[in-house]
Structure formats: structure tokens, C-alpha cells
Amino acid sequence: MTSHLSWNLVYDYRELLSFHFMLNAMRAGTIVAVVSGVAGYFMVLRRQAFAGHTLSVVGFPGAAGAFWLGANAAFGFYGFCVLAALIFATLPGAGRSAGRVGNQEPAVIGTVQGLALASGFLFLNLSHGFAGELNDLLFGVIIGVTDGQVIALLVSGVVCLLVLAAVARPLLFTSVDADVAAARGLHPRLLSAIYLVVLGVSVAATSQITGSLLVFALLVAPAATAVRLTARPALGVLLSVLIALAVTWLGEGIAFFSPYPIGFWVTTFAFLAFLLATGYHWAAARVRVPAAVTA
Amino acid sequence: MSAIGHLLGPIFIQRALLAGTAIALVSGLVGHFVILRAQVFAADALSHVAFTGAVAALAAGVDLRFGLFAATIAVGLLLGVLGGRSGPGSDDATTGVVFAWILGLGVFFLAYFTAHSSSGNGAAGVRVLFGSVFGLSAATVVLAVVVALAVVLALAIIARPLLFASLDPAVAAARGVPVRWLGTGFLALVGVTAAEASQAVGALLLFALVAAPPAAAQRLTSRPWPAFALSGGLAVVAIWLGVGASYAWDRLPPSFSITAVASLELLVATAWSLTGHRRAGQRRLTPSAGDSDRRSPRCG
Image (cartoon, rainbow over all chains, first blue to last red; front, side, top):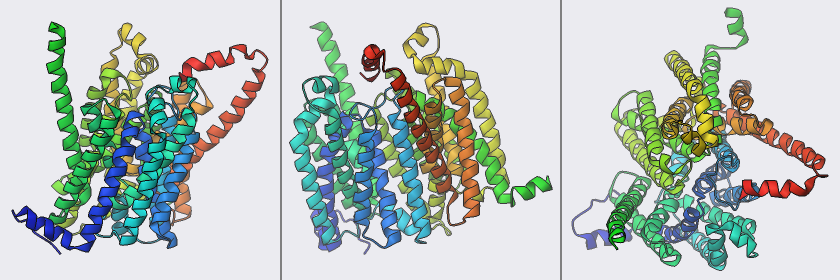
């Protein structure tokens, strides 16, 4: 099954898609990239990277528990991620930006994260399945995506995108200024809860492909890159999706021809995009400031 | 010695308790400031860096502990320098992007190590991620205790100005406290703690000791120094109870039971403070006019 990269890219592309598992991986990656690009954009805007990271980790005990009980791993992923999202939504301070001094929310989220990972470890210990399953759950496999999984991904992805589209405007408002939004009659807590559940579902879907530890890269990096390139929300979401797609396709393609896992390639390309955008942002600020000073 | 030794069980339990106590004390004390300074996400990042440092050291064939400490201290300093400018927890997206990539690097090193070592089967990676407090060597225990003493000493020296700088950075800076240097130095200490804790409970479960006991302590008392001491104490209790539980039921991995006890502490403390808070609120009901006014600036 080891294929070698020739310099004829058209040939490589045909060979890549001649494997059904690879076609499924590409389909799944495309769905996952679109959903993560959109959900991640709001996550970065709302400064909920820590909650997002914890949600992405919470899928691991869910899947490990399902594995232990002999159930379908997908139930574990979705069940645990949505449950954790609901817990976060009830925390005092939810709906407001994290990272304030004295805010107790991060401590609780951190504890949930630690407990989740420890439980996942316990479940795997109890089920005697070890290093192999553990590494797959944490770091993802691209060769195991079935047709059924692709359809399930598509359904959950479409639902996530529809819900996000429905709440996008008020969510944007509360994300930018929760107090003014509340004064205008919006419900920041309710919107935050809806958003967290959507984030949980999309993360649960993604982590089945990329593994629990690397979902976060796809959520945060394209969105953070997009935020550096433009301040306009609609364009930002579009850029975030495009970057996520490019990173995923490139990562999957190269992982197919290399001995190293997909997670490494996807995170590396995502990080490169972020570095380029940060460099651009920095250079643009340098160029613009003197012009503004002289004018 | 033999009597106490007998009481404490076999040698691996004694080692686990000794190293665990040192590690827990450091994690609890450092964690107090991590929570106060809202730098939980930075600690999260450092715990993932610990994983990458350790597997990179394995892949390069050097001592695992060297990779652990070098990576976490370097990234701790980097986070301090990058994030110090605009206050704690400023740009969480940047932190997230950087550590997601570092984790990806860790996956690369793990794959490399697994492919190129004769005995590698991913078990080493599991040990780094989830810890093995029952498998500590005598040398590791000595290192853990020495490092713990050094960190506690360093923290004791900077504790007072650090508390000032954490609670009110602007006023502290105006009074001549080197706020940025303190912040950077503190993140380096968090890095050392992450490396230290990853040997006991694993890189991924660091939160059990850095987040839960301090958060529980801060729910039990609002005075900073009693909370500081209580936080260290609660972390030590978590290690002792966790190790004891795993010794009693050998199907429970110690990393899980330690984390579970620490989480339970936070749960109990939250319940206690909620009931206490409600009582205080009822007492305050009569002069309630200023109550909502008093709360709004803190939330807003």
C-alpha cells in the first residue's frame, strides 16, 4: 500500500483517489474542514480557544468508553462532547470572554479536561486494548473512514452549519460586545450555550478523523490566520474555510505518500499559514503606520 | 524505617508517595497563581509541550527528562515574552495555534521513534502522556524532590510581588514591581512544574494538580495566603488518596485516581461555597440595594 510520490502530480492525484479509503478520507476531510473553519472562526472571535480545546479532548474518553462497552465510537464522541458543552454553558461567566483575572471558569474547564483524559485512560485500561487504539483515538487515522461515517459526518456538518447560519448575526454581536448585545435584548448566555453545543458537535465529528489531540489545530489555526488577514466577518469566515480546506487536502495528500501521520502534516501546514499571515499582518502594519503619520 | 516502610507498602509505593508529595506541593502552589493570573490555557499549552519535549528526546536518543525540562522552560519563557505585553491570557488564539503545532511535532517524533527503535511500540508515548507514578526509579524520585524544593524556594522569593502584580498589574508597575519579568519568570516556573508533573500523572493530566486543588482552595477561602497553602495541601491529599486507591484496586490507574480525587475536591469545595454563598446572600438580603451595583463592575 506504500505509494511513492512521482513528479507527475496528475498521476499522483489519480493514484491517490484510486483507493476507496482515500476517497472517503478526502470527503470526510472536506466536510470537517468546512465545519471547523466556520465554528473555529467564532471560537477565535469569542476567545474561547481553551473551551474549544477542552471540548476537543473530551471526545477521547467518550470514544474510549464506547470502545470498552463495545458500542459505536461515534456515540461516545457525540455524547461526551455535547455533555461537556452543556456543562460549560452553565458555568458562571459563560457567554463572556475568558482570560479575565479572577475568572473561575478556566479552572473548572481545566479540571473537566484533566478528568476527561484520565477517564479515557481508565476506560482503555479496563478494556485491555492498548497503545494502538490509544494512538488512533488521540492522533487519528485516515484509512478507517467508512461510507456510513462520511454520511453521518455530512448530516452533522450540515446541521451545525445551518444552526450557525441561523444564529450568526446575534452571535457575532454578543461575541464582539456582550454587554451592549444584552442591553439590546439578546441573550448572550443562550447564544453561548447554542454555540458551545454546535462547537461540541462539530468537534465530535472532526475528532473521529483527526483524533482528539489534533482537532484543535483545525479549529484554531485557520480561524486565527483569517482574523489576521481581514477584520470583516463574512470574508473572515470564507478565508477560514478556504485555509482549512487547503491545509486538510494538502495534509491528507502528503500523509498518503509519507510514513508520518496526517496529524503532523495538517498541524504543520496550518501553522505555516498562520506564520505567513502573522508576517503579513506585521509587515502591513509597518507599511501603513508611516503613511498614516505623514498624512 | 522498616516499620514505616512496612506501613507504607512496597518500595514502588514509597517512591510514588515521596515523589508524588513533592510534585503535588509544587503543582498546587504554582497552580494557585496560575488560576489567579488566568493563565490556565498557558499551563494547558505547556503540558502539551512536555509531551513533545519528551518524545523528541526519545527520538534523539537523549535522556527523556532533559527533553521535558528544556522544552517546557523554553516555551514558558517564549509565552512570557510574547504574551507579557498585553496582560495575562491576552491572545489565546496565538497560544492555541502554537501549541497545536507543537503537538503535531510531538506526533511526528512519536511516529519517528516508533519506526526507528527496536522496542518502540507506542508504549513510551503512552507513559509520557498519562504518567506512571508506580514506575519511578530512585534517581527520578531524587530529581523530583530536588526540583520541587528549588521551585518552591523560587516561588517563595517572588510570591509577594507576584501576588501584587497578578491582582493589579498597573498599580504594581507604578510602584516599581518588574511586572513583565515576574510574569516571564513565573511561566518558566510553570514550565518546570509541567515537566515535573508529567512524570507523575502524565503530561495530559497536569490539570488535575494545577487547576483543581487551587480552584478548590480559592472557593474555600478568599484570603490569598491561606488559599495558597491550602492549595498545596489539597494537591498533596489528592496524590496520597489517589495512590492509596490505586494500590487498593489495581485496575485503577494511579493517574486516574489522582485526577478523580482532585476533581472531587473541586466539586465538594464548589458545593460548600455555593451553600455558604447562598446563606451569606440571604443575610445580605435586607440591605440589598447596593448588591446588584456591587456585582456589575466585576462581571462587566
